[in-house]
Length: 443
Ligand SMILES: C[S@@+](CC[C@H](N)C(=O)[O-])C[C@H]1O[C@@H](n2cnc3c(N)ncnc32)[C@H](O)[C@@H]1O
Image (cartoon, rainbow, N blue to C red; front, side, top):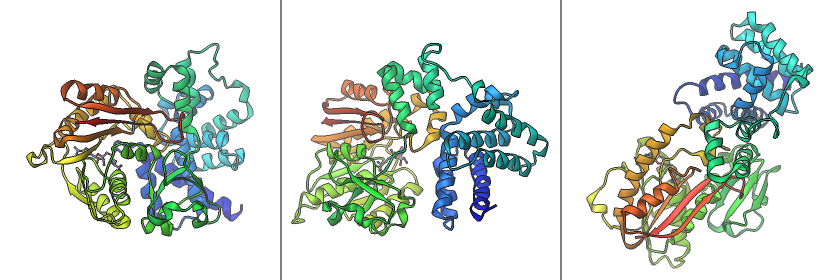
C-alpha cells in the first residue's frame, strides 16, 4: 500500500464521521465540513479535495445512491443501521463518480470501515452488495422517459426530493425543472468580487497561485469566476480584503438598488456582510473626491453574526459600515423614513444555493416555507417603514420559491403604496450564478 493509499484510508474514515455528524438534527453539512477543515489545517490540498468531494458528493447523491442500493440489497436503506447505510452510500458514490478510486479499493475500504465501526458481522453484507453493483450492472434499472413519470425521473437522475421537483415543474414546466436540478450537480466555480485597485486588472489570474484559473464575468463589473482555489482564506488578496466571495446574483441585486454617494443605507439582515460591503464600495467609487461619505447600518440578529460582520468590516476596511445587533422583526421608531435605501435580504429556504449547500434539499417542507414567509412579511413590513419617501427598498432571497418571492412582492404591493421598479427570479442553470430573487421598489 502506498503512502497515498494510507492517507485516503483515514480520510474516508473522517468522511464517514462527518456524514454521520451531518445527519444529526440541526446540523448543516457545510458547517460540519467547514469546522472539520478548520480544525485540520494540516491536511494536504489533495486530501482536502478528496474529503470535500466524497462528503459533498455522498450527500448530494443520497437519493440516487439509495435508489441504486435498494435494487441490490435485501434490506431497504431506510431500515439499515445508520453507519452501514452511510458506508454503502459513500462507497457507491466512489464506484460511480470517482474515477480516481479503483472499485476494489472502494469495496475493501467499505468492509474495513464496517468492522472499525463495530459491525464485523456485516462485512459480508457490505461486501456482497457492493460487489454485485460492480459485477451485475445490468440488474440496475434507471427510470426511463417512456415508462416513468417525469417527476420521478428527475428525482432519481438528479437526486432531488419529490417536493422540490414538483414545485419547480408546476412553476416552470418539466424542462426548466430538470435544468435547475441538473445545474446543482454541475461543478461550479467560486465567484468573487475583486475590490479596490485590483478591480481594474484584466489579468487577475496572475495574482493567483499556480493551477488556479480566473475568468472575468460578463454580467457584473469586478466579478471573477475562480477554479482550483481550495482554500480562499489562505490567499493574500483575501486577507487584505481585495477578494470577497459573493455570487453574481447578489452583486446584480445591490447594483439595482441605485445606491449613490452620501446615501444612508440600512441592511436589515446583513451578515456576513457581502451586500453591505458592496453598497459602501458603490458609494465610495462614485465619489472619488470623498466629499459625500455615506453610511451603511448593518444589522443582524445574533452575536455570532455580528462578530462575522465586524470581522469582514475589518478585513475589507469599510469605514462606512456600522455593524449592530438588532432583530429585524422589531421596529425602532427612530428608523421611520430614516433611510434612502433599505436592503431586506431576508432569511429564506435557500433553494437557490443547493449547489453549494447540498443538504438544503432534504430539509425542504411546506411547513418551513409557510413559517419563513410569515417571518419575511414581518421584516418586509418594517423595511417599508424605514425608507424615506422617494427612497428605495430592495427585497431579496437566495431561493426559488413563489411563496417566498413573487407572493411576498404581491403582498407588499397590496398592503403598501409602493411602485415596483424591477423584479427578477434568476434560475440556476439559466445563467452562471445561484438561484436568486430580487425586487426593487420606490417608496
Ligand atoms: C441571506 S442571509 C444575509 C446575507 C447577507 N445579506 C449578505 O449578503 O452577506 C440572512 C441573514 O438574516 C439573518 N436573520 C435571520 N433572522 C433575522 C432577524 N429576525 N433579524 C435580523 N436578521 C435576521 C440571519 O442571521 C442571516 O445572517
